[in-house]
Structures are given as C-alpha cells and as structure tokens.
Length: 110
Image (cartoon, rainbow, N blue to C red; front, side):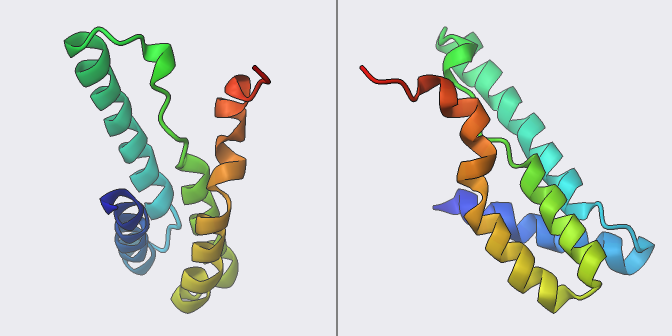
C-alpha cells in the first residue's frame, strides 16, 4: 500500500525541484533509478545472501520507463498540472505493459 504512493510522490517532488531550480526534466527518472538500485540491493542482501533464495526468482518491476514518461510529459507540456494529469495517467496505466518483457517468460500454459 505504501509502494504506489512512494512511487508517485517522490518522483513528483524531485521532478518539481529539478525543474524549478535547474530547468532539467530528470527528477522522476533519477528517482526511479535510485528506487531500482535500492530494490536490487534489497533483493540481493535480503533474499539471496540472507535466505539463500535464487536471484532469478526475485525480479523487481522496472519503473525507470515510467520515470522517463513523467519527465517527457513535463518536458513536452512545461506544466505541472498537465504533467500531473497526463503523466500520472500513464504512470498508472503502463506498469503492466512495461513489465511484460520481464514476466512474459512465466506466462506459459501448464
């Protein structure tokens, strides 16, 4: 329940800061990249090192593309309102399509 809120609030805050101070639309992408690095560290140390679980069974979702979409929407519209409306819509609508290449291997008939 916390993860979806964190995945949209932190990129919005960092994206607002980088856009207002530096005019660079890189905040959401950088935040998502940092989240993925943290997720892989968590998967390695908690699942692989501590529990002995194979790493190929614990693939985290790839949200970097969603950060790129948020930043591209901000660059395209140059409006926080439009980015919040359009970018957040795509942010909620595209995770299944973005994660399909990662999880498509396990969609086989049994």
